[in-house]
Amino acid sequence: MGLYDKGSLAAREMRAKAQKETLSQIKLKNNERGKKMKTRIYVSMLVIALTAALIGGATMAWFTDTAVNTGNTFSAGTIDIDLVDHNGNEITTPIFNFTDIAPGWVSRTVTVNMENAGTLPMRVRGTVSGQAIKDNDIALYGALLGRYKVFLNGGAITEWSDWLDVPSLPIIRTLTRIESGDTLSIDMEFQLPTTTGNAAQGGKVTLDLNLIATQIENLDFTVN
Image 1 (tube, rainbow, N blue to C red):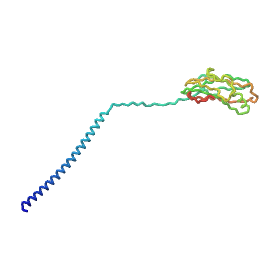
Image 2 (image 1 turned 135 degrees about the horizontal axis):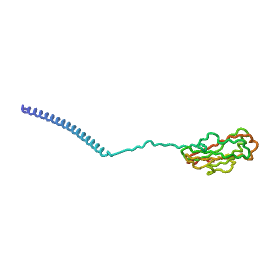
Image 3 (image 1 turned 90 degrees about the vertical axis):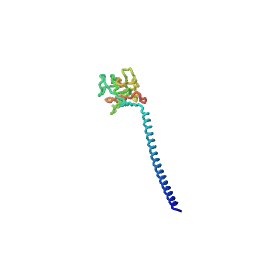
Image 4 (image 1 turned 180 degrees about the vertical axis):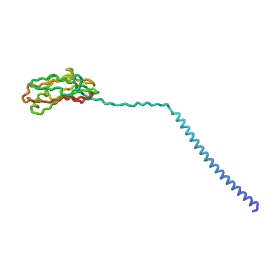
C-alpha cells in the first residue's frame, strides 16, 4: 500500500469520525429540542386548563342572596288556679267554721270562687277530705261526709243538686271549659242528718276542699 493509500485511509477515518461526532451532536440537539417542545406543550396545556377553569367559573357565577330569621321561641303554657273571694282577693284562711251543729242542721251556702290564673283553658274536679282523731270525731265525720250540695256558677252548671250519701265520689266534677282569666263559682251546703247518733256529740272534724285542674285536652282526666 502506498503513501497515498495510507493517506486516503486516514482521511476516510477522520471523515467517518467527524460524521459520527456530528450525528451525536445532532441527536443530542434533537433530544434537547424534544425536551423543550414537551415542556412547551405541558405549559400550553396548563394554560389552556386554567383558562377553561376561569371561563367555566365565570359562567357559573349566578347572583345569590340569603335571608335569616332568628330568635324563634317555644313557651309552655301554665295551669294555675287560685281561690278568691267576691272581690278577687286570694283566700288564704278557712272559708267556713261551723259550731254547735246538731242532727237536722243545714249550713248556710258557702261560696268560693276558683280563678283560672294560668294561660291555658282547663277543666276541674274537686273532693272534700277530712281529719278525725277521737271516736266522736270519727262519728261526726262519717255523718257529715257525703251529705252536701254543690252548685257551680250559681246553678248554671249543677253537677249534683241533691243530698248524697256517696263519700267515695268527688263533690265537684265538670268537663266545662274554663278559659284563662275566667272564674268558676262554687256554692256548697252541708247537712248533719237527723239519724246522727250520740256518738258524734262533742266531735270535731276538719274538712279540706281539694281542687284539681287539668288542661282541657287531657282526655284521661278522671272526673270520678
